Image 1 (cartoon, rainbow, N blue to C red):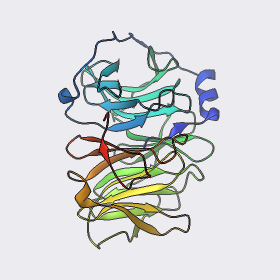
Image 2 (image 1 turned 180 degrees about the horizontal axis):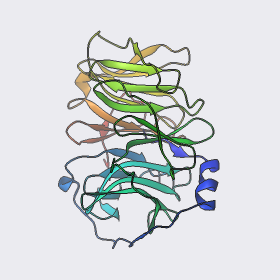
Image 3 (image 1 turned 135 degrees about the horizontal axis):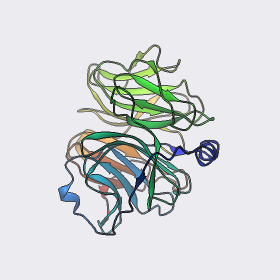
Length: 288
């Protein structure tokens, strides 16, 4: 899941936005979900919990329950990272436009208009897997390593390495040092902000972890290929919530808003969006 922006980071953004360029508002013209080849990030829209916000190689969209794709950034944008405030008003997005890095884009009106918040990195790296970490609202993102921003995304520093063959990153609301990574060799955990990583035993040994996430209540989730969906108990034990056979392929994204008890949304490797209303035990197609 893509964590929400806490009030501390929202205040910092509003007080210090660096306006380098403006991004025109997008006309309210829908697009078919079938035209989207991949989805990098899925977020439940806090302002409309039955809607999703999707970061894709062909733009940023709000998806309605009737499967209408409402563009927030047009299809010239390749959006690889996204964080959203608790009220859905403030958004930060990373990626490219027409194949050129855009740095970090900011919207203060729920995606209606956008401004450049920070310039692209000097070496043209594109940030992905952008997350909010810890109670102070630091930002983490992945490029050729693990990057951190202490000033709401204006400046970034390479602070650590991700584990080899990483597929996903999850951060904690409680500590900026508590990280989880999904990798082709299973789930990994770091207690020191990514300086070191240790294997976590979940499901059969040696199986890839295709997804790792924390929902809006900070509960951790992972999907182990050929095994299923697992969640972590308060005592730290990983337990299976749903078998792999319940899904069409592996899960690669999962999100849940803190105000929606038991409501989760997941994305499969075949770009199928699913929803659960019972804490991940059973799933149905999104929008039905």
